Image (tube, rainbow, N blue to C red; front, side):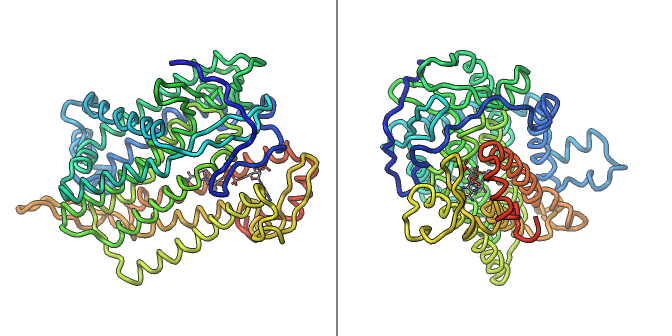
Amino acid sequence: MAQQEPEVTPVMAKKRGSKPRAKGIGIMSPAKHGFEFGGPIGAAGITLGLPLACFLATFVCNDISGCPVPSVLHPSTLTLEKLKQEVGWPENGIWGLASYEVTGWLLGYYLLSLILQGILSGDEIEGVALRSGGRLKYKFNAFFSATLTVAIAVAGTVAQGPDFVLWTFIWDNYLQLLTASIGISFAIAFFVYFKSFTVKPGKPGYRELAAGGHTGNKIYDWFIGRELNPRIALPILGTIDIKVFCELRPGMLGWVLLDLAFVAHQYKTYGYVTDSIAIVTLFQSIYVFDALWMEPAILTTMDVTSDGFGFMLAFGDLVWVPFIYSLQAKYLAVYPLQLGLKGTLGVAIVQGIGYFTFRSANNQKNRFRTNPKDRRVSHLRYIETKSGSKLLVTGWWGMARHINYLGDWIMGWTYCLPTGIAGYVIQHVSDGKRVVQGEARGWGMVVTYFYIAYFAILLIHREMRDEEKCEQKYGDDWKEYQKKVRWRIVPYIY
Ligand code: NDP
């Protein structure tokens, strides 16, 4: 793979009013800093633990014996043989977790994603200033690319119904798809790690190491990511920014495709689609397509401006997002809960509040940073910092320093609530299977509400990291800002 050429030109962002911040904003990636995520031990623990957690979630909540599997509720009767039967452990043992064929198809999906990025037209936008002073260019067409892929899948469904090959393939090979996705995330993490050693400081090319990614500890650096913006130049397809590609393409769309496969499976099994799975899939799809529509906004996120690209982001983007975030739809594919009109309306109201907060807050900051004269933000008050950046102190950003996280978290509830008091047992009866809640009622919530607990931890941790970054960047100005805007995420509470 060829090395990318330097791609720096004057600012020419020209996208839907959500271009990255204007010239003159402080240069990103400050000097080296210390360990995060518990250092090397934490990194090793997360690297081993998260893939295991994904397998655990797959096995413990299934369409063979229940959610959770019955033995979990009766630990005294638990034997390895019984557990293997209940979780659907592959007949050929550990080798059954993977399949060359499934891996091949998944790689084909990644290739399709790359091809669509390369051949579809897209706006070219510049990122924030690098330490070198230059700016990298990005081609954005993720929304169009994902819409096209989903349109093809919809056309296939119209032609073949719920038996459309994509949906049955996903359902039948879910475990092998998970294993292959984990494998791909490891492979990419190793690739970008070794590639990062070709970064030559001071040389043109606008390649640089991430501030927190070159501690010298191999495990930690591999995990957190050494290089800030690893890129590859592919024949015909052009330059691909590996981090931005992984953040917005195969994993995000994969999440929607998994959800749709679960909807198809529910319909195939029961002959109808419940309001619960429809609403979960709809809201999660809105979340994904909203992020793709606002694609340029990714350029000012911490992930792109400060974090290196290593195993943490590769795994998060390609495995955790699609497989863990879709667990509610997977649950509902087997247990077809009906919410009714009141339940559906209740969840829709929560979604409305969450989305309004999330989108308005993000838009307000984006508009303020890109066009402060915009009449929707021109009335807001701000403090002028020594770095040249302005910090809003009224409007959404005057309520809490990360009010946008609150909106995101509220939306998270609408993915979990439609699973109700979750849990089911599968009874094998003479005429097939019967799914009842029985003694599992409530216990399935460990799986279907996991997201909301995990997401709270992620956002609190992320807020602390961002706070640290801003303290370093703004010094006393940040202290003044903290005095004016007291709350971190939730006004009057936190
Ligand atoms: P944010 O959009 O929250 O931006 C934080 C940055 O904004 C700060 O570093 C600072 O940057 C600037 N800023 C802070 N305060 C102010 C202010 N008062 N006025 C103007 N600018 C300010 O960053 P994230 O990347 O964390 O989040 C983006 C979105 O992505 C969020 O809505 C979040 O919920 C979502 N998200 C979702 C995840 C998921 O898994 N679903 C994971 C992570 C994020 P500067 O240096 O420019 O001043």
